[in-house]
Amino acid sequence: MTIRHSLTIDIPAFLSELFAQIDRYQDLGPNWDGEGALPIERKVVLRAKNLLQLIATRATSLGLRWENPSVAPNPDGALELAWEKDDRWVMLIIEPGQSKVGCATQEHGTEPRYRSLSKDEAIGQVLWAIRG
Image 1: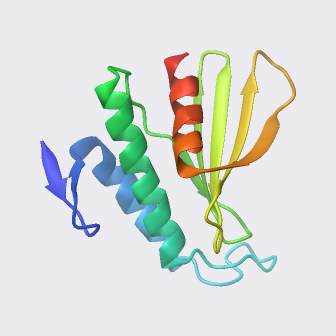
Image 2 (image 1 turned 60 degrees about the vertical axis):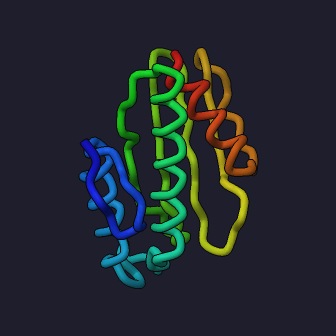
């Protein structure tokens, strides 16, 4: 079952609640944390939802079990999307004004690794993490 969403694409029903949560972050406004946080811009929200749609589609086509990520706003006006499975963890950071995606990964208790990746590379990192 799919639901028509404001992105004018069909999204799987399992993403609709996650997308609604992400949409609500646009309502935070400036200084939402009381310490000068930047608001979450619509462009950031749209990029995050587009990326999630791509990741979910690719995961489904590979037969991977999908679990929605944890989503949190970042005081720099970014959205953070995090997945954890077994001993792997990945966080994507969708920042305003950036074409690349911030990506932090960690495996087997090693030190986290941070990189700036293309959209396709970021998708690959999430697939790596959810394969477990």
